[in-house]
Length: 388
Image (cartoon, rainbow, N blue to C red):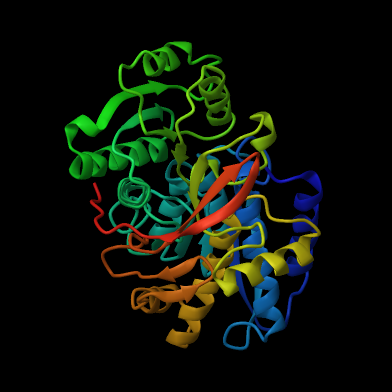
């Protein structure tokens, strides 16, 4: 996703942050994929976090201390996250940022938890928190269950769609959760007959001809197709659907955020994606619009996905909680984080409780693509969310 130029700018900024070494500093660790196949997914997350560090330091730091960033490249290998976290513990970090996926972020987060250090992720699985890791793990994402329920409620109630076909890329936990929660909520709203069919494929499958044939062979065509996938398999599936004459609207979750892949689907239209904010200059929240202007000024290019908001919010949340606690010690910062009630972060109003460390009611943005161009539809939240 992230271009070479943007990542190079991030690494220059990273070197600047690490080289600051003020007399009184507080360390935050990044155990992130700086290389390997997962690197493009979290590049904007890293950039957003580093921008927050730079801006907070320029404003005087946290409790008078400058933030110093220590990094470890897990090379897109989940198990290396534990090695990196162990190194961060030895470096004396007070908080740790780990990859935006439970499977990738958990190894480092477990080490952080065992050593009494807060960890932050952009994982959309509620297991990244109290239930799956412990009381010091926090996600700045919105639960995948909430995203699926949101899409179902918006599609049924706002768009008036009555029938849906569910196409699941059965590769990662997020896509399974998204499709599962959508299907459950859709059946509650439209009835069992509202789901015309459910099918699966794998992200690396070169063809989904059989799945497409089952859709085109339906006696009743679906009002909408839910696609739970990510690039490159997701865009490939859309191309095949459209080429076969499936012209129903396609909706999807934040794993297909951004327009970096839109050029691979000629004339991409009637496509809707839920994400954290519009990076196309038309967000209805002034704070989000201003964030993307600052991001572009810092890195010399527009953000390519809204994950940058999650990265910024990780540092923003930690700094705000530390100021509230009057301490950078993890236990005290965690106690302050657990008092957040619709805390106005750049990723949106965020609530944490001692029992739940991920958002479920936060409004999310829905974007629409027409002729390959994305624009905001609005911001919505789910009325009913069931967590597994």
